[in-house]
Image (cartoon, rainbow, N blue to C red; front, side, top):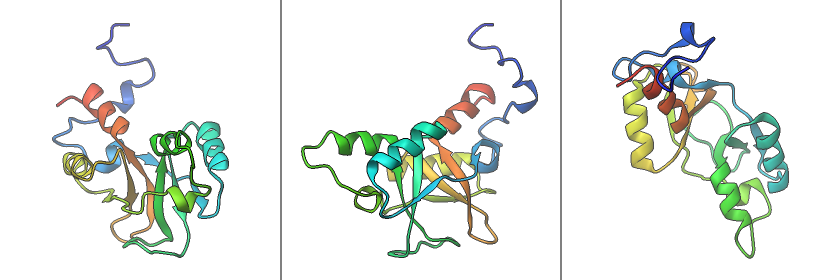
Length: 152
């Protein structure tokens, strides 16, 4: 297999070109979350066990314009950076990025990518446009997959 051929088993799942793709074409369905008082060690375990790069933080301290209590996210980069500090934070609430970027499933993937670049984030919470309830995560790796297999 060459680096430009579609991997076996992916033939029927090749995404559309980014110019025609929606967020739903690229996102990961489902969302892993933790409570605000979860320790960072447990957050690391959640990421490691489920092979994910971010975890949503739930609580009632702040509500976003979404239909649940997700009010922050922690990426693997955030977690590693925090643990390298001399006095790392203790809980998910202490570390969570409070400026959560949300995108709708029906939105254009190109627009979502532009928003993520503008906001300087590698993960966005994907919401159902009708209920505003979180239904998944969109990462820059998801967008790269569309670029790799769907094309420009």
